[in-house]
Image 1: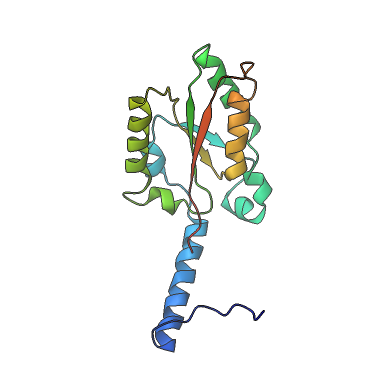
Image 2: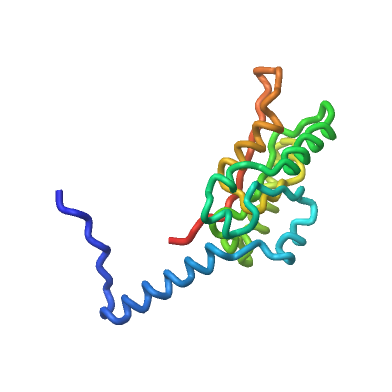
Length: 171
């Protein structure tokens, strides 16, 4: 079979080249953008967690560091679980910056979605916990949270859920 060709641009070659260059630049900016203080402050009720990534560069260059929670993060989750006593939530919402924190931070993205999600779950009588906010977090960091919080359930009929909202790369 012939190799797939790059999608044809409907504009002039100069316009197409300019568009591709602009798109690539926005993708690079998104990849290196960190969650800022104003954004994390807007999620004041969230429990902050960190992965084993030292910084954004470590997170991008060493993907496995963003998949594993820091020792402090694991301890925070264990304390959170202990504080629930016998009243563990049905749903745990996790927010991670992923490869594109801007996808969360841009106005009209995460905050209205999160508000409506929490309202909908509450109206449906689901008990939800404070959200977790993971800096430099990948998908597997969310799996680790779920395992720590809900993995030792002794009741096979007990159903618990994790909703992991993660910033994804553009393109």
